[in-house]
Image 1 (cartoon, one colour):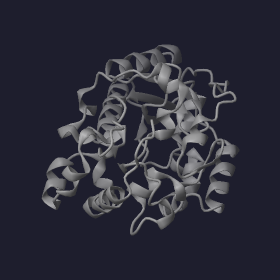
Image 2: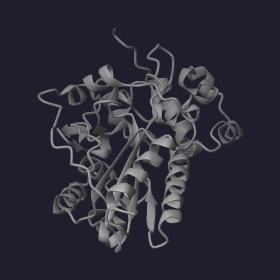
Image 3: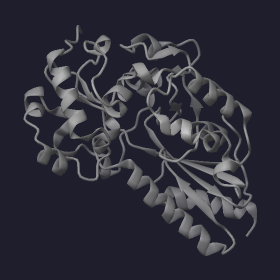
Image 4: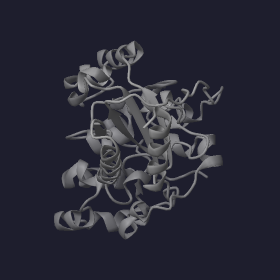
Length: 316
């Protein structure tokens, strides 16, 4: 099968599997990935995420991770189901974690796609990656033409804004490639930088995880530093502020058709009083097959208690 026909087959199959966007780019070493990552680490902006350091060489050079790499397929899956309510007394919960664990959903679809391709060509092989793999998926997504990396460091697109889960298939075969996305459509806008309550976006395209509400409420273990206690803006798991205030989100967000991302048990509308009653058994049942398990019961209870004591009242 020609590169063109195989590439079209891949794209058609990906869309049939429910992916929202797909692009293909050649595998190559990009020194800017290495330099950006090393600078981020050197400045300590990865916080306690030591797994970034441990697999830095693989993340910075795709051939260190998969030596047979010839092509990189990047897919995007729209997960947007609506903004988290801002009512006083309601705990806020990041949109991406309302439903089932996206890692499982993405990988299942990616492996299904890979299986289809292997049935076409027995010499074809590859590896499926989500954000737990050492791959700079946002950089590859831009090279594959899906969109551009915004000032909030998330991938932005003109049809789904930044509400996309990204998945990657690295293949050992050359394909027909898409043009990289060259334009930076953020322009002079600084809404994401201006509205971040903890100033985690220390500059355009520069995120300091030490200050990020998502990092603090999910990845950080132990007590959250006191300087952030009154700046969590009612977020008990993750944070969507930089995405919500983005003009591209306000114009181009599309509600997903995938029922797996719908809010389970109205977790996006619960009051602090409801959350304070959460037991460890409740946690296990409510968040079975959910990405929320990442923060563990103790982490979520820490966030609930801290934010309840420092509830943010929206002046609007």
